[in-house]
Image 1 (tube, rainbow over the protein chains, first blue to last red):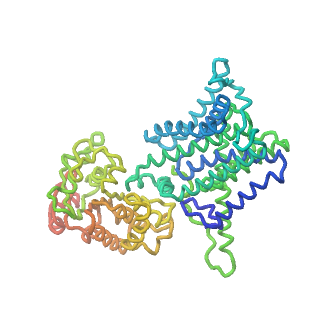
Image 2 (tube, rainbow over the protein chains, first blue to last red):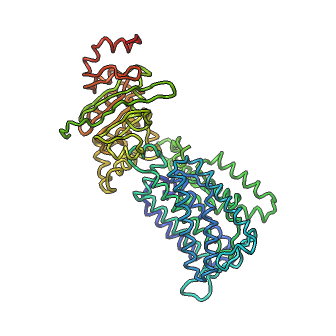
Image 3 (tube, rainbow over the protein chains, first blue to last red):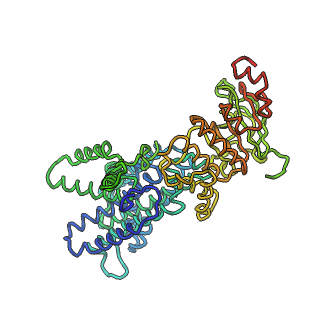
Length: 358
Length: 241
């Protein structure tokens, strides 16, 4: 175990150190807007809300063993739901709720057909990707004035501008910049902690067992389909929340939320950070987003090309991702202390426990 | 075990064809509660196919498999597990990335509430003598140990019937002896069917043996009688029966 049990992809109960880490993170995140400027807050808020999307994927992939290439289906749906509901009803709280529930319902339907239809995991990736692209095409085709939901025009390619910010009961105006920062940070920490704790429950442990060996778990009497579908729905809801927060953050939704670029980026964040942990995808999102911005600023030009190269390096050299690799390195260094005769070997993970099977 | 006259497991007219090849042909098979039954036969005799039919891993072309009087054909794997059948295939099939303890816990959880599963892990580890390696990751264990972990997983689900396909394959003599002990230990609570090649191993565990040949049951009886049977010898030596 590393000092902070980050690399524990099995359902290990969190240590007190982990709780200290969470508490410190909360304090730092709460205090950050007091000492930083607006542009950094904006950038960090975006990273926080996007890392929810990464979390939703890594929960499915790293723990459920299912690679959904199209988590952006639920992300985009969440965004559009929030936009349409808030502009129609004027109550943003309910809009936020709908933006989480509707993607969960869609995930339940889509997941039911894929998982109960016993499609293999590779088809699940293909189908989710196809579905997100279908949504993108469909939304792009809604530029005519006849495409109206309630009083909101869908606007096709152009997206929906002027989405209202979140209205909180204790304030007259919608959330300020700091408010959005705190909201996205709170959402990220809450979801991270909730998922981490979920994995220590009976449900979470069974889910990890299914990732490790679905056939064996079935022979022992577990109906793996129920567990996988539940994971798919939970992660759909989280992706929906992420999309809704994006709408709150940017006051804008567009078909790009569904597109291939966005879908692929989520995979990159998770691979770079390491899918066998939950903190990894958060770090991965931060690193890649920051890198993207920085590359843009220094004028490299071909940002996508450089990102592709980064991905290749990670897939080839750091197969477990950034965080698990650092964790393993930490273990080696700790064991090399004088007087310790244990050979400094990396854990023999020939079967790459974090990796999805197949 | 109960005294009902009904066999625990029986097949009637069980048949499996792969294209034109009849791998298992019209087999009627009965298994009483509390038995350890060995299925033997030369390569290609159909015993492994028969095993897969019993465990519901392939669908028969014709016939029925009755477990406690209920038809198992076409049931999902988890339903067969829940009905009280524990299955161990030839290759170690375990949760490689998890510890032995977590593996056992999951198996116990399949039948019991989480708290009960916690205490069961230690009971089973003791019963199967896995205590010292409870904390190890299964993927790092030796082949023989992984086989034992898998047998422990099967035992932990509290089955009425255990189906084992060549549990001693690839083991050293010493490991084989221990596996035989383990199987006899399991037999205290469960009926057992073992598919096996190794005669020395069968000698250690079997009372009754069923011999397969060319997809049919050639003969059936106590181990000593079967070994003395000239027809069985001919089959094993490759002569036509």
